[in-house]
Figure 1 (tube, helix red, strand yellow):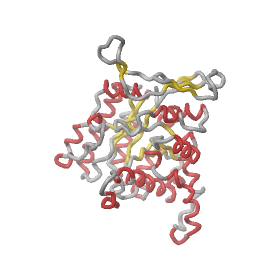
Figure 2 (cartoon, rainbow, N blue to C red):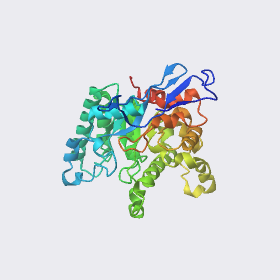
Figure 3 (cartoon, rainbow, N blue to C red):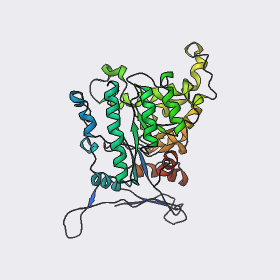
Figure 4 (tube, helix red, strand yellow):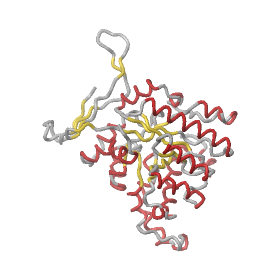
Length: 367
């Protein structure tokens, strides 16, 4: 394995006390042959402190809840690399985590039940949340989870969120970028947002494309994902900002997948829109801050692929708002630690916090 050092030269002083080892997922073949041994990436040490690493964007599925969908359950398993690994074999998942240098994963299930009736959606979420809690209990220092909610029935979602936090000890809930195209900034969803604020629950926004553009996404390139997913998150976040949600619920904790979509790349345009076209804005909603200032109330994962993209996102939202996200077991990002360590213009403290301390604080983790 190659060893990388952050600093001007190789003296300990010049290194700023920061060392990490680059890697990809692999096994080590013992001398003399034989079966390969799983590789465990050495920890990152920053200024004498071992950095705990937390991946807040990882997935799993449970066959029991898929089976409840009957014939409609056939399209739930994603047609991607890593699809079968959604059905977690703990030893295999821990081996992947060790190879990537991840101490803890926060698991979530992308909502496939938003079209279901109330009874079915309730049963699916019950199975998911019970199974998530059981899985976390098997390895409590390695797994946490975001609960499943039947967001199409806000009153039910409130009860499910409370149960997830108080009974199952989960870290919050995973919700879509919309509820089948219906924005959850709307007042009917406010009870869910209010309950999340009350409980200190983090709402993890993970989109499922942008339903209204389905026909335009057809063709080469999987545009439903490459454009549709980040677009839906961008819309969701801008709606929360412009509709005054972060003023109404100032302690609401929102975590956005995929680096918050396109928002971090073009956020300053928001500050001019209502000045340029007042007729397209609601005079009854008077934000307490510039729209871009609300970015510092939102949390984002680091799944933006390049060091320059991550450097820019950190400059826009603040390093305190960023934490590892991989989308594992779909292999979008196979070196999440190296991604942060090699991003330019971050301080030692920034790297330490983004690797895990930010997530530990946000989610009240015990690792």
